[in-house]
Image 1: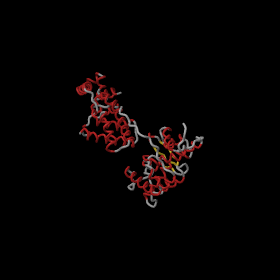
Image 2: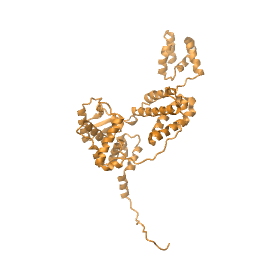
Image 3: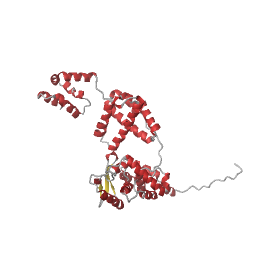
Image 4: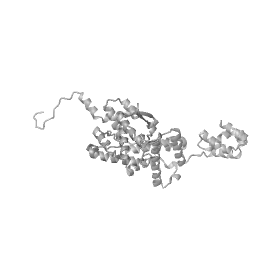
Amino acid sequence: MAVEVLRQCYGTDADPERRLPALSTYLGHTHLNYTYWYLHQNPSLMQQGGDTARALLGGLRMNPALPTFPALLQRFFTQRLMQQKRVSAHTIRSYRDTFRLLLRFAQKRLRTSPDRLAFEKIDAPFISAFLNELEKTRGVATRTRNLRLTAIRSFFRFAAYEMPTHGAQIQRVLAVPAKRFDRRLIDFMTRPEVDALLNAPNKSTWKGRRDHAVLLTTLQTGLRLSEVTGLNRRDVTFGTGAHVEVLGKGRKQRAIPLCKPVAAVLEAWLDETSAAQDGIVFPSMRGGRLSADAWSAFWKKHVATASEACASLKKKHITFHCLRHTTAMDLLNAGVEQSVIALWLGHESIETTQIYLDADLALKEKILARTIPFDSKPGSSAPTTGC
């Protein structure tokens, strides 16, 4: 096909130099030089192409063009992540933040601006130093460190196909291990704690009614924060079979039913905002989506208020994700099977729900009650004689 297109260009006296970039893009070539390879395969076209084709082909044979680090990084985001893998906007932001930090670290350590940074400088010792710096200066948790490493590994797996001459360097970077960490039991809220949190927003104000609707909807559906912020009016259905539809992690779509009290609160809130079909369900005061800082302030404010009414909250590390854990624990205590909980929460595997079984002390107490206790008495501190 490519040879036929070039033959038509030369045969009709069209300017082939203007057609080659489009043809190169269509074929997925990383460099325009590779498209001239088709001229080399056809001697008649080579003769018609003249000096320009011969010069480019000579450069292709003698000095294959390798992309620079900035160009490779841009291609990783635009081609691999956005076009080929079609990852979510949340993943794009996470990877973007990782390389933002990496480029700042490179400028500080190597005294090199991002546009002049060479791929050869990003080796395994440099990556290890970057990860250690994150833990030391920014105080990130081990999970966050490993998340940054995941983004870097994804980039170097992409680079392995684009930069085969740097295979040894890429292999050493991919061999940098993730750091092990202690797996604590998850934190979740009891019903008195949930009631205190739901009563925290001032429902006489616009923001209070919005925040109450957010908390109540999340507690019943178990949505992730990114799923809550991404909700639009068209994603919510009322009446018979009331439910919300979300496109969650891994681009999996799922529908979660709404009970009548939650549906009533959410419908009243949407009636108040008069949101259009493409409108945001939980907007900011200015009508846009709430930023990460706004969500953080929103959460800290209501947890602090709820902690004054329910002292047990002060002993727990409560985050917005704990609402999701609370939903799962309620379903588990209601006798819902693990597979159903995994479907409800949009988990990739049923094994992910194991963390809720580990945290359910009431379930373990029920199991203990079914066993026959050992018949033993505490020892005595009184001195005894004999053996």
